[in-house]
Length: 136
Figure 1 (cartoon, helix red, strand yellow):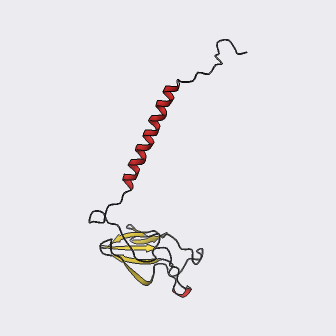
Figure 2: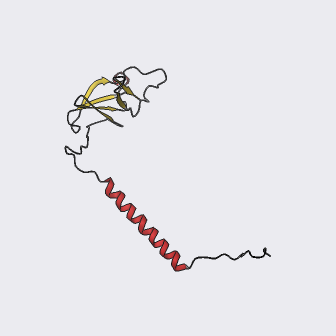
């Protein structure tokens, strides 16, 4: 038994209304999916939109434009221990064609808290106030 004035019967919306709502949601999901696919398309490299390409092993790059030149910094290479670079470096004048600076290590001595072989995805930026480069 329920208190006076309280309706214990549940009211369900009519089935056609639920079908219409479901159809609208499906259409919205399809539209969002189509728009996101279009947004992901990558145009060809040009002066307005460049797509850097680097030959060889240069994973997780960070790009810095400084002094009219692009600098790329990447995860360590996996060479023999005597030739391992903690942070690889490449340069480019146009942001598309890159030259790796073989033997150049942007972090030749690891800090005490770092583990050898685990220097991944560096990011480098210019602190213009202090006029220094910061890597993390």
